[in-house]
Length: 502
Ligand code: NAI
Ligand code: MG
Image 1 (tube, rainbow, N blue to C red):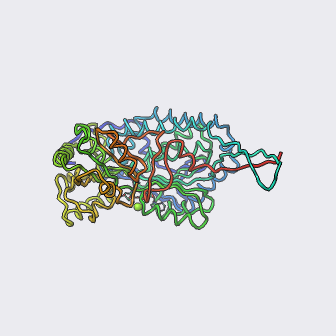
Image 2: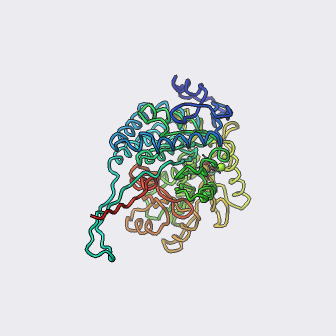
Image 3: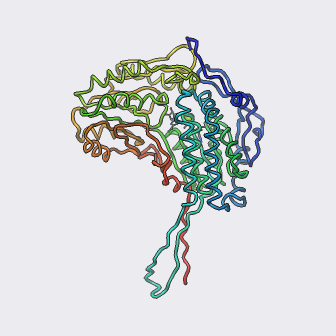
């Protein structure tokens, strides 16, 4: 950064946590990688190394899966009463809240996100997920069934279903909401009574390691949760392919999602995937622009655009096009960029050099293909991975910036004439189907459009509203299955039908 900035002083606990050698949690014990190797973790605002973590590979994966297997097959977790499990989950939520400031600082330092956002959203939402799931632990139920078997006339049966934990689950998560993605995955898997090996992203491993300790402190028995740090190919891939894993739950790129499916194919593991998006955000001419303009702006710029559901394709009805384009561009210009740990920061750096290069590469390709950059368009400052909030006009349907997930603060704005089939076609014209937005004062119109959008979440007159009770996931290549809500429990449960002749 160019200017001097005031950053939040790191709490002594964060300092001591950052300073310690980072081990991984396997079978209730903190251990180094078998080969003792480590890799560096960076502060994306300064490009400085802040920590070293264990570089786990196949032998560590084997140990972690064996620990989870043992905990599932003969450990206390699946045999504990649902009420006992629920109380541990609730306690994890409580401990997250008790450590809110520490976790928010860690998240901001590691990922680059504004501390104000981590405090208000990431950490409380993570806690809430555990609290919500804790209530479900005692409410996982089967059915009793009335049979009419044609070839056993007169026979009577007592038939029922049980919902049973699927077994050992591998969970692989990304770097955009490191703690929250860990919570989205761990809350339901533990509620279902499974055991788990979690691999956080190599860019942002710190908060998951801290969360693992909080889970132990809450009373989670050894081996139920194992957290290993490592790279995608050398750690994630052997984990996804491991023969003793029953299920893989992945959040990340669509490209790696396809690799996970391939890795799971040889023994037909169950798989759920939460992948990319290129979400349409539609502003009708009757929308309240005082709400729609800041809403459309935050739909794309929240978390620096590093959201799978970012409203990255903004469609505006012609009559309001100029005003919305100008309004969103003004909002983009006013966003205050800075290190996440500065409380005044509204947008931090992108997470890594790789992501910085990916996003600036898209900006270059947009220019080459003839899009007009209204604001932004390049790097901000000369240190750290900061990218200017960018608004593109004049994009065509075949341009990469219009088709592909950029995962940065870049929005394309396009006009439409009428609310007709062609608008719906354009909104749905993407391989993804994760989220969408509609802005209108006419609820009838808004709901009719919402029904036609091929997306797992549609927000009307709001955007990026998340709640533990609301299922989230994708149509088309945005994924398989849903996170959150009670629906997510299906990801981690098998149904067993039991039929007794009586
Ligand atoms: P990625 O999909 O490579 O990484 C996500 C996780 O998958 C990380 O934990 C990584 O270690 C792991 N992984 C990578 N390769 C793997 C493999 N072969 N087997 C098993 N695990 C593997 O995503 P990346 O490279 O960080 O970002 C690339 C693009 O993906 C972004 O620009 C964005 O478009 C998209 N993305 C989408 C996310 C979402 O929330 N849906 C989150 C992160 C990235
Ligand atoms: Mg990758």
